[in-house]
Image 1 (cartoon, rainbow, N blue to C red):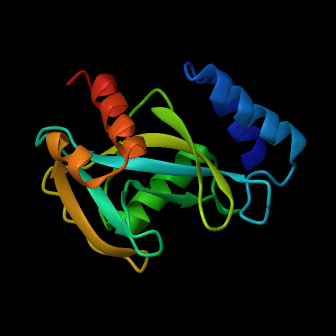
Image 2: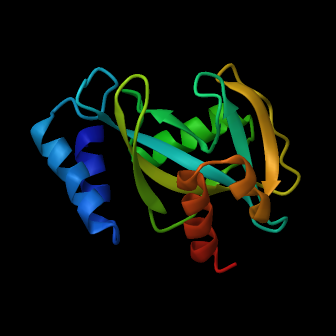
Length: 173
């Protein structure tokens, strides 16, 4: 199955954010290249919030280009088996944490935002960090830092705060 087809299936199964979900599906229907950075009208991206649920904290990256505290994520690549795989790859590459596991049940939320390259139609997952996880800064980050849930609103924008809230609700915490 193509990454484009996988994205359409994931979005059709996603419950919630109906208007935004439909915008994503319409984008895919109108753009055969809608998964790729080369699509100037915007593209689907995949991200994952890295969570230490027992410690009540999340790992955020200080993005090198945007200079904002964000979850790990980015563009899909031809070798990605699906959106979930893209999100897990991005989270692992950008956090340096081995052994991440996506929360079951698919994406946590959707977020559409403009970036220097185009509109990102982000499909957001959450990934649990294993006990004793050690992070390592990648070339895409200026810094990595664990933040208690309550401090995220002090450092990150509303999209990250909403992702943390949705992840906590999914975790039942």
